[in-house]
Length: 127
Image 1 (cartoon, rainbow, N blue to C red):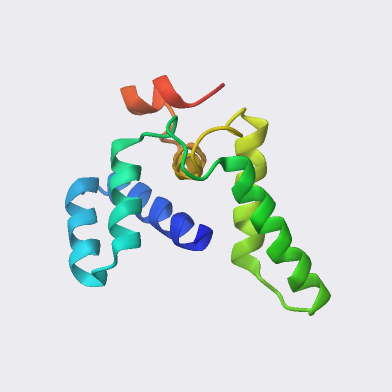
Image 2: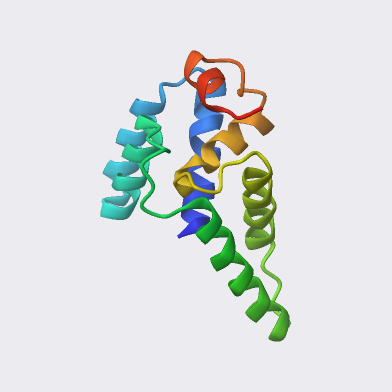
């Protein structure tokens, strides 16, 4: 599920940078995938309710570490999981450990130069 979150965060950041409304893009995603999981994640990301965790950031990192441990034991490369681990570590370094894992959006936004571009991002991104 963390891979889905990473993909959604990257997609929402990209569409914002191209001038497309995130809400419109989420509607398109929901129409294409018709997945309760995608719909729920999109809603949480758009609402930016990171301080109401249902899956804490630190627990997401723990799960990713477990997956990567099995990957190492089975000699299975998982480059996306490695990327998500790096993003999760950065989130913990920024003090996001008790926020919801959807706060991954803040990390992806920061990497894209959006951490100071909106009032919401300025208020939310720990410095």
